[in-house]
Structure formats: C-alpha cells, structure tokens
Length: 366
Image 1 (cartoon, rainbow, N blue to C red):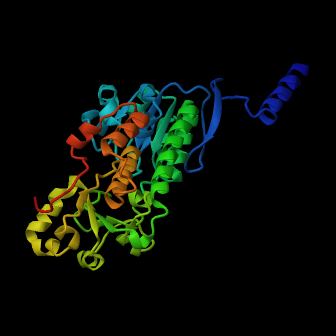
Image 2 (cartoon, one colour):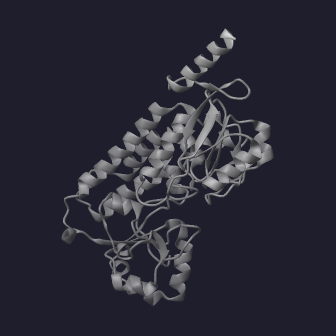
Image 3 (spheres, rainbow, N blue to C red):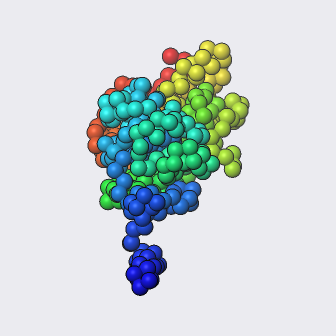
C-alpha cells in the first residue's frame, strides 16, 4: 500500500509541480503537448525524429528550418517536378522525389493526405497547413498527431507566418535556427521601411499590381489591396482604395480611372494579359504607364503558401522601381542571392529568373 501511495505522490509532483517533466503515453513513451496555429493542444512524442509535411506552407517551413532530412514521405506535386514556383523544390527536389507519396499537395487547407500511406511510413508527427477540421479528420484517420502550421498568404510576411515557424520549430527542436531566420526577415523589413518611411506621399509614384495569382491565375484586372511588397516599402497602391479586401478582380475601367504611374505584372500570367491586349489594344495603350514605358514584372510569391524568399525580393524590387534614389545601392541579383542563401542555404537566383520569375521591364502585347 505504501508503494502505491508513493507512486501516486510522485505522479502528482511530476504533473503538477515540474513543468518540464514528460508524461508517458499509453505505450509508456514520453510525450509533450504543443499548441498549434489554430490553438489546438496536440500531444506528440517527447523526441520527434520523423515527420510528414502536408498542405499549404508545411514543406516550405521544413526547408527553411533545415529539417527536410526528417521527412519520411512527400506530396505528389513536389515529387513529380522541380518548379521555381515553390522555392524549396529548387533546393530539395532530389531529396523529395524518391520519398513515398503521402498526399496530393495543394494550398486549399483541405485534408489531402493519403491516410493509409501515412500509416505505413509511421511518422512521429504530421505537420500540416490544414484547416482545423481537416487536421482533426486526418488525425482520426491515422492515429498520428497532426500539428497545424497554416499561415496567411496576405499582407507582408505577417505574424501568422512567425507563429507557424515557431510551432514547427518547437515540434522538431530547431528554435535557434527559427529565431535566426525570423530576425533576418525582421532586418529586411526594417531596411525596406527605413529607406521609404520618410518619403512624403506627394513625392511618391502611384502603383498598381495586376495579373496576380490567387486561387489560380488572373489577367490584368486581378490585383491586391494591401499588397505585401507594396506595404513593405510604404508604396501608394491605387487598389488600397477598395476597403476590407485583399485579392480581387477589379473593373478594367477602374484601372483607367486610377491611371497609375507604374504598373507591375506577374510575368507568369503575361499570356493572359497579352490575349487581352489582342482583343482590345486601345485600352492598354491609353494607360499612361504603358505610354511612358513604366510597366515592370512582379513575380508571383504565392504557391501553396507564401514563398517568403520571393515576397522579400519583390518588395526590394518595388523599392528599386518606385524609389530609385533610396535603393540606388541595391542590386537584385545581390539581395536575391542573400535572401535565398539565408533562407534555403543555396543561391538559385539565376535559375529563378530563367524559370520565368524575373525582374525587369515588360512590353504588353509582346
């Protein structure tokens, strides 16, 4: 009886007095509890060695944190092809392509995991850019803890990304690497803001970004209010006139009314814009930015979550175009190399531009 009482008291002390004490699960293995980006409390193994990453942003964060070697499975869309549209595949496709398929891939937030295949590879934890409901569904299907790391693809690398990084880092034990990367992002954001915050609005050029990618590709009228790269350099975005929204299809005549000084377009969607030009060249030729040759590229930074590397580069390019004096010392190939090397450990800026995500002037209709 004394032994039973002593064991009970020890358990109470462990659970109630010592925050760092691990709790055994039903199998006798030590576990700990983490809170994911939805606020779900998820019990995971004390030592996480193998993971699966699914959905919006999760594989990308694994790449940023340098733990791709922990993956025991990968999504089909990453296995099939290396694509410049998702920055991490440019560095890690050779590592990903031979892993077992454990999900379809995509950024919708739905449960696109292959439950049976996940059970076969037996990860310690599933890290997913899923909705809360999708995470619960997959966890019930597999019996494996699912920790959500979904972040927003709006604004300029906002707090939702910081939270997702920290949750992921807590799971895999890379807090030092995580904080170093977040400090680098903060330093970039501070540099961009410091260069532009004291420029009076009266001295700024107005800007419009079109042909953007959100929930698919869009033509000239696809745009953003609160566009991240513009926010980063305190730009005058004509679309900010539309309140309580982010990405949307505007009316073509509204762009004529705005008549921005500078137009930025996603080079990956120029086929759509050029088709529109063939139908109505007079419309485009009437725009002052087109007449004056002030049309520039703005590569898409969203594909199954935000490519933070590209978002930072886009902000620097917006600054170079809109405030040439303030950014006279910045060269895209130099800042691009620094961002890619820091975030992913490899500079593929040249391959990025060769793949269609390039920085430069555009001629609509060509």
